[in-house]
Length: 278
Image (cartoon, rainbow, N blue to C red; front, side):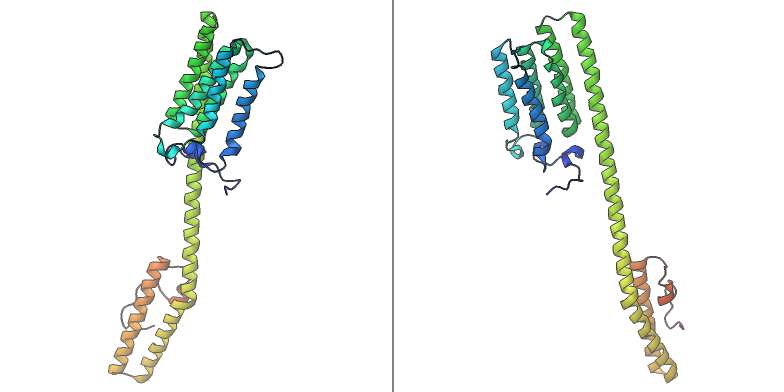
């Protein structure tokens, strides 16, 4: 189950996991339902209280496109090309255009063009967001011209919607980049902390058991060599002491890497010479 504090991967993942990863991530319902409710409210709002629908064929086309957008969430995205997800916000943009044409520019539903734009900048790649920006501006131009809006007003709407759409897209993708960078930095920091803790744990275990036992065994052999005096037996014991010194040095280099507080238990971090007196 997705953690409540874990960001949705689609929010920060530009590469994704195959086609349609925007519609297949955990917790999709909680994120898609608000967008769907807005679309439903807008489609119903033009019917009440007295009905602003001027063209029923265009209204039917708008509802059909809206249903197609909802059904797109059930598509087998793994089998589709990677560019196909952009069709979903584009379909909804076209649905809004048909709704505007059906109800008129004065109905106020044109503001809903922000819905596919917000969805795309949150959960799609940059080039997909750019496509939706172009589509939103085109819808504003087409609906204004279709309603016989004066040319100056059409130009003003195109400029304002272009500026607003680009601003939203740039700001949202910049925020996603910062979130992604923060997550990567946190992951790297957590990995480093985990590695340090694991290394400390292994080092503590070696210090308390393996290294100390080897060191104690070396001391015993060294003491025994001092007791038996000169001779072949002493030489063999001193050779064993040197081998133990080498084992301690190798463990220190591979685990501790540098001298630390274990110096008091295992001696100097420098490799002792064979036969060196302790």
